[in-house]
Image 1: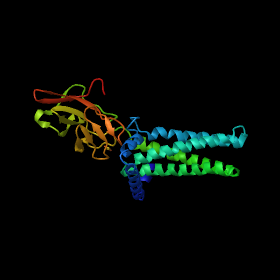
Image 2: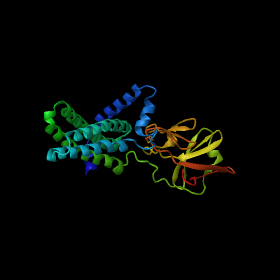
Image 3: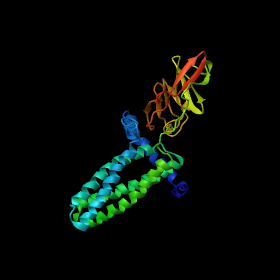
Image 4: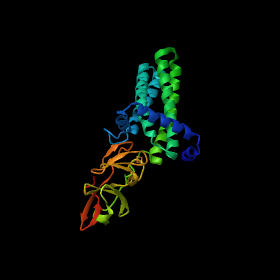
Length: 292
Ligand code: FES
């Protein structure tokens, strides 16, 4: 039902494009460090895993504790008022960082995923704004604390919906999941072509027992990685080659042929690496053992 409702919201697209442009412009404005900072925000660098879903636990958890503390304060007076304020403040700090990482990931979404991400992002941004107002009221106008507690309680109810949409975005429609999570292929060498099929400096897509593989010959040597981009499934053989680094044509993640490592986001997972050999003019590949 959520899926059907979101798919029909065409009005979200122009709003989404404007936000994506603003995110892109913000990183460009950072100058040369911009791409490196963006890689950290995706989770490509340092974490090797999407950063946003890990961070969202902080505001959701803190705001949950905050609402509990608020109502225990109201109902029993045995929990100090500051407990709710502190949890709320921690949630706001975590929420700001989570929002920054979320909008960074949002920059490379499109289609149905982008509409669903918009619903999630706008909901959570609204919640964050309400929580900031609640915090300011608590700090600036203490006599309005009951109103602030009401605001935080309302925001918590909305956050449950936003978190549900976020979960659906990942688990329901596969945003930010590793598109090679179920990568399987030959454990023994299988023929994928002959020497003449793989020319110096060129990438070529082949199938190895149904597994899409992209092979590059560089300095005479053959290297092979999975052909399906870990980020969202882009065809790497159509990407741009720079040395032994290929840039995905869809959202410009970069992967190294030598070891399959991701060297530029938005992808956060490496490409599967395959072993290649050339014997008697025949080119064969297989998965490494153990898998890398
Ligand atoms: S599919 Fe998004 S970077 Fe490759």
